[in-house]
Length: 361
Image (tube, rainbow, N blue to C red; front, side, top):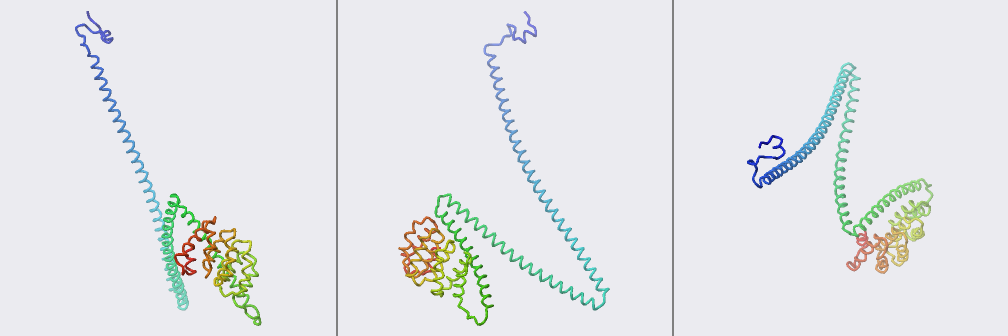
C-alpha cells in the first residue's frame, strides 16, 4: 500500500516507517529549547538595542554641548573681531589726526604753531590726568567690588546657617534674626535722623549767624531746646531729641523740653524722648526711675526697648526690680535684652554703663 504526498502532509506514514513511542515529545522538547534560545537571543538583542539608544542619547547630548560651546566660541570670536575692527578704526582716526596736526604745524606760522602746540600739550596733560583719575577710580571700584563679593559670600553662608537653624527648630535663631533686622532698621533710622538733624542744625546756625550783632548768642543747648519747642514734624523732633540727649549739659530747660514728648503720639518720638531722658538723667536715678517705669509700660515694643537700654545705661539705678516684670514681654527682642541684662547683673556687680548696653544690644 502506497501513500502520496497529501497523505504524508496529513501525518499518515507507512507502517514500516512509524516512529517509536516518545519520538514526538522529544521533538517538542527540542522545539521548546530552540524557542527559549530564540527568546534569550531576542532579549539580548533588545538589551543591546536599549544600550545603543542610551549611547545614542549620550552622543546627542555631547553633540548638543559641543554645539553650545561652539556657538559661544563663535560669539567670542565675533566680539573679538568687532573689538579688533574698533581698534583699527581708532588707529586710522588717530593716524588721520596725527597727519592733520603735522600738516597744520608745517603749514601754519611759527606763532600759531607755538599756540597750537601749547594747547595740544594742555589737552594731552588733561587727558592723562583724567586717565590717571579713571584708573584710580577703577582700582577703588574693583577693590570695593571684591569686598562686596566677599561680604555677599559671607552673608550667603550666614543665611544658609540661619535657615538650617530655623529648620532644626531653633527659636533663638528666629528671634535673633528679627532682632538683627529691627536693629538694622533702627540704625538706618538713626543715621537718617542724624543727617537731617545736622542739616537742620547747620541751617539754624546760619540763621543765628545772620541775626543782628546786638542779640546775645545763646548756648548750643538753648538753641536745641528752642528748636525742639518750635519743631512740628516727628522727624524733626526725633533728630533734635537725639542731639539734645547727646549734649549731657542741657540742664533743667532741656529736661522740661524733653519730658512732654515722652507722651507724644508718634512712637519714634516717644522712643527718642526716653533715650534723651536717660542720657540727661543718667546721674540722677531718683528722677529717672519714674520715667523708666512709664517707658517700659508703653504699648510699643520699640519704645520699651529704648527705655530698657536707657535704664541699663544709667548709674545707680536698681535694674532688677524694674526689668524682671519684662522677662515675659510679648516682644522677643525686649525679652532678649532684659534676659541679657539680668544675667549680667550678678556676674559683674561693678559693671559699667557701656558694658551693659553692649551686652544688651
